[in-house]
Image (tube, rainbow, N blue to C red; front, top):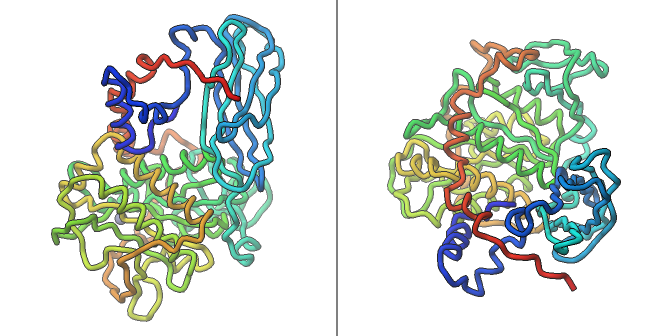
Length: 455
Ligand SMILES: [Zn+2]
């Protein structure tokens, strides 16, 4: 079952549960999933394991198990509340063993809700799992970028490296610190629709506040983002997978090698002191790229909309909004844009980590998840609409930079040994930031609704 997507919706569901009479309006907000407890204990269970986004099509993989029997089980697949497919599983080899099912659904382009319903002879039919899925989003890649895609390899240690040549199993690659090398093991990724760049890493910490170091938070949000995109059936890869240094040039090379629709560098800001009545969110886009600009404007609008729900003493600078930042020579200041000129790229600065109230906000459970969902929702809006988005941004020249992100003093992480890599304090942050509030844990135990019959 999915957690309600916004804190507001979550609060509403929780309030509805605590209240002895559930308001009629609230019933729509309660997921129509009957958990396998109470009368449903022992009923067949099912889980959507993967949704793959193809053109005009979603491929659904799910597993079904019935711990009390080895018979075939009737299933239905609902799309947006209507029956789109039905069938019967194969017979499991043993009692209780899970059986996998793969079905391909021809659908109208866009977002859909996919649910699995299973038949139980004694109890009737119940919905066992639902997930949002999308057909393949419209391609926003230039042909020159697509033609030049060489792919990347996820090395055995988890480190992602761009491929420069060679043959499968004997790839020529560039290490994170920019050294040419060959790699004989790992999994090859020919392309990704989205490349996510967790800002900083290793000796480069970024901003900090309330005990959060930016590089850790960037990694936490980026991991949630990749998870969220993949659950929608959209391919996504990271430029950094643990706490190691990756110079900007390498990050851009990974993005170019994977020819994504968009390259998003996830950051959290530092430095502002000016009090503001609204969030000081900044999103930077690549100079001269209309699609980067449109995404940055949508992203800024969605981020500020989400943050405006919270009562926080915000800070900002004149650079708030979706902007282009140039060097004195008129080139993009940020290497993320400059080194991957054919890729739509943006840099997000959701909140000011250096401002204690904003850092404290990010420490609330569910906030990192909320940020990841806001970014995904903005991406979906960018793909599926022509919205222009709003922005306070501007075009400005400011060559001052922190001077980090280069190759000097860079030490490569191991490509072969996963145990040698640490994700730093990100793991503890994951536990702190993504822990479900206790009310959610109560949800299945309190909700005993039956599943309405579909006409
Ligand atoms: Zn940063």
